[in-house]
Length: 242
Image 1: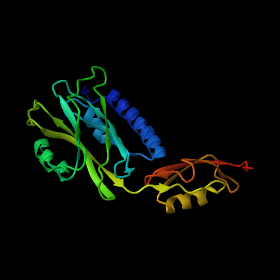
Image 2: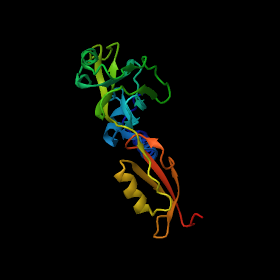
Image 3: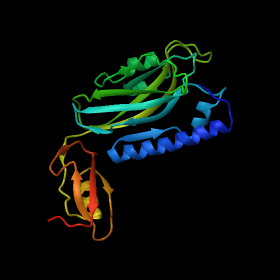
Image 4: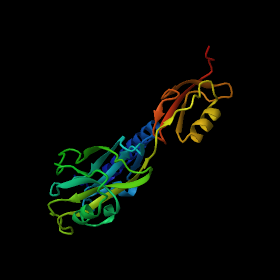
Protein backbone atom coordinates (compact mmCIF):
# COMPACT_ATOMS: atom_id res chain seq x y z
CA UNK A 1 0.00 0.00 0.00
CA UNK A 2 1.18 3.55 -0.58
CA UNK A 3 2.86 5.21 2.37
CA UNK A 4 3.31 8.86 3.25
CA UNK A 5 6.70 10.55 2.73
CA UNK A 6 8.40 10.13 6.11
CA UNK A 7 11.41 8.65 7.84
CA UNK A 8 9.81 5.16 7.80
CA UNK A 9 9.51 5.42 4.00
CA UNK A 10 13.19 6.29 3.69
CA UNK A 11 14.08 3.44 6.04
CA UNK A 12 12.07 1.00 3.96
CA UNK A 13 13.65 2.28 0.75
CA UNK A 14 17.10 1.70 2.25
CA UNK A 15 16.15 -1.83 3.26
CA UNK A 16 14.82 -2.57 -0.20
CA UNK A 17 17.97 -1.25 -1.82
CA UNK A 18 20.04 -3.54 0.40
CA UNK A 19 17.88 -6.51 -0.52
CA UNK A 20 18.04 -5.61 -4.21
CA UNK A 21 21.84 -5.45 -4.00
CA UNK A 22 21.96 -8.89 -2.38
CA UNK A 23 19.55 -10.35 -4.93
CA UNK A 24 21.55 -8.82 -7.76
CA UNK A 25 24.81 -10.24 -6.42
CA UNK A 26 23.30 -13.71 -6.14
CA UNK A 27 21.81 -13.46 -9.65
CA UNK A 28 25.21 -12.49 -11.07
CA UNK A 29 26.84 -15.44 -9.31
CA UNK A 30 24.34 -17.78 -11.01
CA UNK A 31 24.73 -16.08 -14.39
CA UNK A 32 21.24 -14.55 -14.36
CA UNK A 33 20.31 -11.05 -15.52
CA UNK A 34 19.02 -8.60 -12.93
CA UNK A 35 17.70 -5.06 -12.74
CA UNK A 36 15.92 -3.15 -9.99
CA UNK A 37 14.28 0.16 -9.15
CA UNK A 38 16.46 3.11 -8.13
CA UNK A 39 16.12 4.96 -4.81
CA UNK A 40 14.06 7.69 -6.48
CA UNK A 41 11.74 5.13 -8.07
CA UNK A 42 11.29 3.30 -4.77
CA UNK A 43 10.42 6.53 -2.96
CA UNK A 44 7.77 7.21 -5.57
CA UNK A 45 6.43 3.65 -5.27
CA UNK A 46 6.08 3.94 -1.50
CA UNK A 47 4.82 7.51 -1.12
CA UNK A 48 1.12 8.32 -0.98
CA UNK A 49 -0.08 10.49 -3.85
CA UNK A 50 2.65 9.44 -6.31
CA UNK A 51 2.41 5.66 -6.20
CA UNK A 52 1.10 3.35 -8.91
CA UNK A 53 1.76 -0.38 -9.24
CA UNK A 54 5.28 -0.81 -10.61
CA UNK A 55 8.19 -3.23 -10.75
CA UNK A 56 10.62 -3.50 -7.86
CA UNK A 57 13.09 -5.86 -9.54
CA UNK A 58 13.37 -8.36 -12.38
CA UNK A 59 15.59 -11.42 -12.78
CA UNK A 60 15.84 -13.45 -15.98
CA UNK A 61 17.91 -16.17 -17.63
CA UNK A 62 19.79 -14.33 -20.41
CA UNK A 63 21.35 -17.24 -22.32
CA UNK A 64 19.83 -20.43 -23.66
CA UNK A 65 19.65 -22.55 -26.79
CA UNK A 66 16.87 -22.72 -29.40
CA UNK A 67 14.30 -24.95 -27.74
CA UNK A 68 15.99 -24.45 -24.34
CA UNK A 69 14.50 -23.46 -21.01
CA UNK A 70 14.47 -19.91 -19.67
CA UNK A 71 12.59 -17.88 -17.07
CA UNK A 72 11.62 -14.40 -15.95
CA UNK A 73 11.01 -13.68 -12.27
CA UNK A 74 10.19 -10.47 -10.49
CA UNK A 75 8.39 -8.55 -7.80
CA UNK A 76 5.79 -5.83 -8.07
CA UNK A 77 5.74 -3.07 -5.48
CA UNK A 78 2.89 -1.03 -4.01
CA UNK A 79 -0.24 -2.71 -5.27
CA UNK A 80 -2.96 -0.14 -4.68
CA UNK A 81 -6.23 -1.53 -3.35
CA UNK A 82 -8.25 -0.02 -6.21
CA UNK A 83 -5.97 -1.28 -8.99
CA UNK A 84 -5.98 -4.86 -10.25
CA UNK A 85 -2.85 -5.04 -12.42
CA UNK A 86 -1.80 -7.89 -14.71
CA UNK A 87 1.79 -8.78 -15.67
CA UNK A 88 2.43 -9.99 -19.23
CA UNK A 89 5.51 -11.34 -20.98
CA UNK A 90 6.03 -10.17 -24.59
CA UNK A 91 8.70 -10.48 -27.26
CA UNK A 92 8.99 -8.31 -30.35
CA UNK A 93 8.13 -4.72 -31.31
CA UNK A 94 4.73 -4.85 -29.65
CA UNK A 95 6.34 -4.35 -26.25
CA UNK A 96 6.81 -0.63 -27.03
CA UNK A 97 3.10 0.08 -27.48
CA UNK A 98 1.25 2.08 -24.77
CA UNK A 99 -1.79 -0.19 -25.02
CA UNK A 100 -1.56 -3.90 -24.23
CA UNK A 101 -4.22 -4.75 -26.81
CA UNK A 102 -2.10 -3.11 -29.54
CA UNK A 103 1.07 -4.72 -28.21
CA UNK A 104 -0.57 -8.13 -28.44
CA UNK A 105 -1.17 -7.60 -32.16
CA UNK A 106 2.48 -6.61 -32.75
CA UNK A 107 4.28 -9.17 -30.61
CA UNK A 108 6.59 -11.79 -32.13
CA UNK A 109 4.35 -14.87 -32.57
CA UNK A 110 7.31 -17.27 -32.54
CA UNK A 111 8.05 -16.41 -28.93
CA UNK A 112 5.80 -17.30 -25.98
CA UNK A 113 3.34 -14.86 -24.49
CA UNK A 114 2.16 -15.30 -20.92
CA UNK A 115 0.01 -13.28 -18.55
CA UNK A 116 -0.75 -13.58 -14.88
CA UNK A 117 -4.19 -13.25 -13.39
CA UNK A 118 -5.01 -9.97 -11.71
CA UNK A 119 -2.89 -9.50 -8.57
CA UNK A 120 -4.77 -9.39 -5.27
CA UNK A 121 -3.48 -6.92 -2.72
CA UNK A 122 -1.13 -8.03 0.01
CA UNK A 123 -2.63 -6.24 3.03
CA UNK A 124 0.77 -5.90 4.76
CA UNK A 125 3.41 -5.09 2.17
CA UNK A 126 1.42 -4.53 -1.01
CA UNK A 127 4.00 -6.63 -2.91
CA UNK A 128 3.56 -9.62 -5.18
CA UNK A 129 6.01 -11.87 -7.00
CA UNK A 130 5.50 -13.48 -10.39
CA UNK A 131 7.41 -16.00 -12.50
CA UNK A 132 7.21 -17.03 -16.14
CA UNK A 133 8.95 -20.28 -17.18
CA UNK A 134 9.12 -20.67 -20.93
CA UNK A 135 10.83 -22.56 -23.75
CA UNK A 136 12.72 -20.54 -26.35
CA UNK A 137 11.47 -21.09 -29.90
CA UNK A 138 13.43 -22.95 -32.57
CA UNK A 139 14.71 -19.82 -34.27
CA UNK A 140 18.12 -18.59 -35.48
CA UNK A 141 20.85 -17.87 -32.96
CA UNK A 142 21.04 -14.24 -31.89
CA UNK A 143 19.87 -11.76 -29.29
CA UNK A 144 16.15 -11.17 -28.85
CA UNK A 145 14.36 -8.44 -26.91
CA UNK A 146 11.56 -9.14 -24.49
CA UNK A 147 9.73 -7.22 -21.80
CA UNK A 148 7.40 -7.72 -18.89
CA UNK A 149 4.53 -5.24 -18.92
CA UNK A 150 2.40 -4.34 -15.93
CA UNK A 151 -0.99 -3.12 -17.05
CA UNK A 152 -4.39 -2.06 -15.75
CA UNK A 153 -6.90 -4.70 -16.81
CA UNK A 154 -9.98 -3.02 -15.37
CA UNK A 155 -9.04 0.61 -15.99
CA UNK A 156 -9.99 1.96 -12.59
CA UNK A 157 -7.29 4.65 -12.45
CA UNK A 158 -8.62 8.06 -13.43
CA UNK A 159 -5.63 8.78 -15.68
CA UNK A 160 -5.49 5.37 -17.36
CA UNK A 161 -7.92 3.52 -19.56
CA UNK A 162 -8.55 -0.21 -19.60
CA UNK A 163 -5.46 -2.04 -20.81
CA UNK A 164 -3.12 0.91 -20.27
CA UNK A 165 0.50 0.16 -19.40
CA UNK A 166 1.49 1.05 -15.81
CA UNK A 167 5.14 -0.02 -15.97
CA UNK A 168 7.49 -2.15 -18.08
CA UNK A 169 10.98 -3.66 -17.87
CA UNK A 170 12.90 -4.86 -20.91
CA UNK A 171 15.53 -7.60 -21.09
CA UNK A 172 17.69 -9.45 -23.64
CA UNK A 173 17.86 -13.19 -24.29
CA UNK A 174 20.69 -14.61 -26.40
CA UNK A 175 20.19 -17.91 -28.18
CA UNK A 176 23.16 -19.97 -29.30
CA UNK A 177 24.39 -23.51 -29.84
CA UNK A 178 25.66 -25.27 -26.69
CA UNK A 179 29.41 -25.17 -26.12
CA UNK A 180 31.70 -27.44 -24.04
CA UNK A 181 33.06 -26.07 -20.77
CA UNK A 182 36.89 -25.87 -20.87
CA UNK A 183 38.92 -27.78 -18.29
CA UNK A 184 40.43 -25.15 -15.99
CA UNK A 185 41.48 -27.51 -13.20
CA UNK A 186 44.83 -26.44 -11.78
CA UNK A 187 44.77 -23.05 -13.52
CA UNK A 188 45.30 -19.73 -11.80
CA UNK A 189 42.37 -17.36 -11.50
CA UNK A 190 43.64 -15.31 -14.44
CA UNK A 191 44.23 -18.38 -16.61
CA UNK A 192 40.79 -19.77 -15.85
CA UNK A 193 39.16 -16.40 -16.52
CA UNK A 194 40.89 -16.08 -19.89
CA UNK A 195 39.97 -19.63 -20.98
CA UNK A 196 36.33 -19.27 -20.00
CA UNK A 197 35.87 -15.82 -21.52
CA UNK A 198 37.48 -16.95 -24.79
CA UNK A 199 35.00 -19.84 -24.85
CA UNK A 200 32.09 -17.42 -24.48
CA UNK A 201 31.40 -18.25 -20.83
CA UNK A 202 31.26 -16.15 -17.66
CA UNK A 203 33.75 -17.03 -14.90
CA UNK A 204 32.82 -16.74 -11.25
CA UNK A 205 35.93 -17.04 -9.07
CA UNK A 206 35.55 -17.83 -5.38
CA UNK A 207 38.15 -18.49 -2.71
CA UNK A 208 41.76 -17.26 -2.53
CA UNK A 209 43.19 -15.67 -5.67
CA UNK A 210 46.84 -15.25 -4.70
CA UNK A 211 49.72 -16.18 -7.00
CA UNK A 212 49.88 -19.78 -5.73
CA UNK A 213 46.12 -20.38 -5.77
CA UNK A 214 44.78 -22.85 -8.32
CA UNK A 215 41.34 -24.00 -9.43
CA UNK A 216 40.43 -26.85 -7.07
CA UNK A 217 37.00 -27.54 -8.57
CA UNK A 218 34.74 -26.17 -11.27
CA UNK A 219 31.01 -26.29 -11.89
CA UNK A 220 29.76 -27.27 -14.44
CA UNK A 221 32.43 -29.92 -14.96
CA UNK A 222 34.81 -29.83 -17.90
CA UNK A 223 33.29 -30.82 -21.29
CA UNK A 224 29.72 -30.26 -20.07
CA UNK A 225 27.63 -28.71 -22.87
CA UNK A 226 26.08 -25.41 -21.78
CA UNK A 227 24.46 -22.41 -23.51
CA UNK A 228 26.81 -19.56 -24.44
CA UNK A 229 27.14 -17.00 -21.69
CA UNK A 230 26.64 -19.54 -18.92
CA UNK A 231 28.45 -19.00 -15.63
CA UNK A 232 31.21 -21.40 -14.61
CA UNK A 233 32.05 -21.33 -10.90
CA UNK A 234 35.74 -21.89 -10.08
CA UNK A 235 36.65 -22.68 -6.50
CA UNK A 236 40.25 -21.73 -5.76
CA UNK A 237 42.61 -23.34 -3.26
CA UNK A 238 46.25 -23.22 -2.21
CA UNK A 239 46.23 -27.01 -1.82
CA UNK A 240 47.57 -28.73 -4.93
CA UNK A 241 45.49 -31.55 -6.32
CA UNK A 242 47.24 -34.91 -6.50
